[in-house]
Length: 227
Image (cartoon, rainbow, N blue to C red; front, side, top):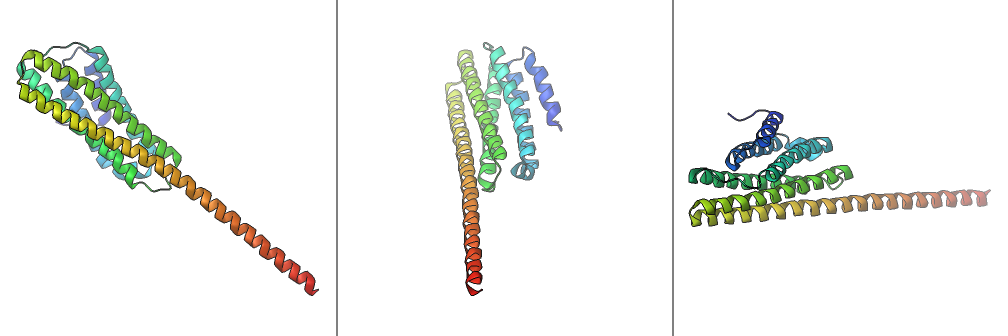
């Protein structure tokens, strides 16, 4: 049964990661948690696209998740599979994890491409931080993939299965990086466009003020001459 509250899910993950769990046990929980984060973003998409506060909350969830993944990797440098079946399950979960990370990157790219040009600077900064978090998570998954694939080779998993997993992993990591870099680049462009619009409006306003002032001075001069 899927978890209904992301907070409970992440709390359960923390308890699991702190224990000496295997990569397979870790991945089972990590995949479920990343599904929850993705589903959360889908249900909150309208809020995420309009509210900096909502985006910050989403970014906080991503940061916490990425930190747990990073912690697990630091505390589990060496961990052998107990069987070929265990290794195969880990490879399956690794593919799911990688694919879901691309989905998270697509969410950020969507928010960046559909947000109005007059987005406030705080929102754009949060969006860039979210992109960086997903890039860090992408790197973490890459480290995990290297370790799992090495252990799978050592335990004697078929070479073609490993090659296929490596190809999927490589494609998904590349897609994640491309999407998140796109989001950050677009966000920078939006900030620049916003500043340009503000400057243009200010310049136009000053021009109108000067024009009005000149007109008033001309009228006053005409009235003085008539008198």
